[in-house]
Length: 164
Image 1 (cartoon, rainbow, N blue to C red):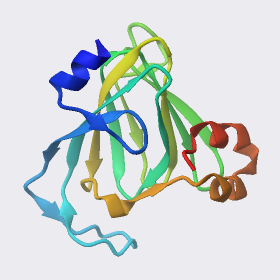
Image 2 (image 1 turned 180 degrees about the horizontal axis):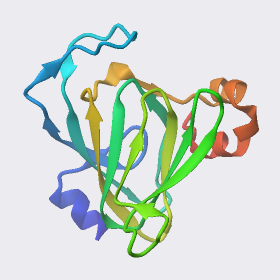
Image 3 (image 1 turned 90 degrees about the vertical axis):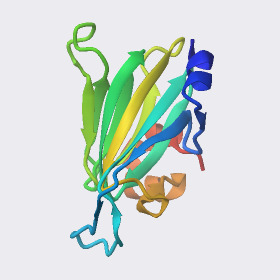
């Protein structure tokens, strides 16, 4: 099923892990008013994502707010580490199957996060909406040594979800 969905949705490999395709960018633009100094961005953007088996979506953080929406397949485990080192998980999935799951989960800006499947024998199709819209220069990929220096208490999680 995952391979069929990759083909049907025209998904391509995502450098952070899994597969994706951009599905929408707002025609409206905004100038972020926070202290980041970012230039004009699309007001929002939406992508489809798919993870299968042991795929992960590696540690990264965004300068934009993001919300993930479950569509089909296994539940996702969303791992988050805030700037002060607080660790939190959320389950993205069907709350009728798992009372702890939610159809959508929010990731605040500047919070480190990673994703994995709850059921490693399955797959998950989900969407991510970002506001302001996604721009590569607004994404910081987690580097193991840097993250271990900031959050040594989360060594096992950092090593599990870092690409480099």
